[in-house]
Amino acid sequence: PPSSLSPPFPIPSLPPLDRGSLTEQVQALQRDKEILKTNLNKAEEEVKLLFEENRALDEANKRLLCLLEKEQKHRSERKHSASNSTKFVR
Image (tube, rainbow, N blue to C red; front, side, top):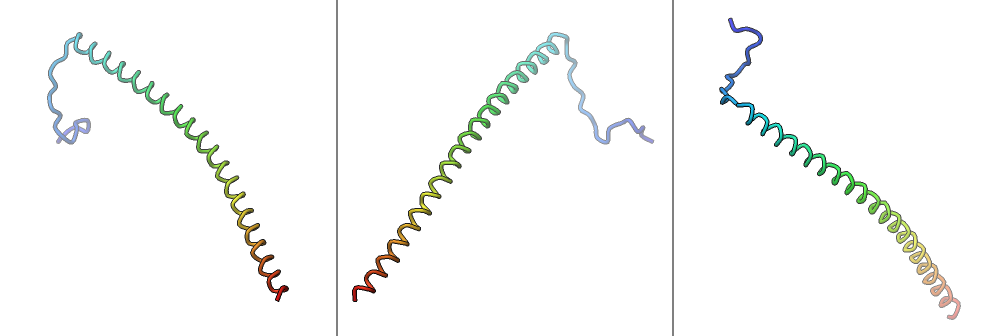
């Protein structure tokens, strides 16, 4: 019976690594880690900037919508007023 510690699949044998190649791999992983940290920091800063830009655009959009609604209401009132004044002229 297989022991409970053996994996359920065969593990391929790996070539033996010497101290130098292990050191190189560790250094490569450390460089990759630093690059990933830098990229993450840049991405986080970009997200913050995009969030602020989006917030500013949202506020501008709300102001423009409010102005549009006022303008449409004003036009509607003018049309209504003009149609009433023509009724009295007849």
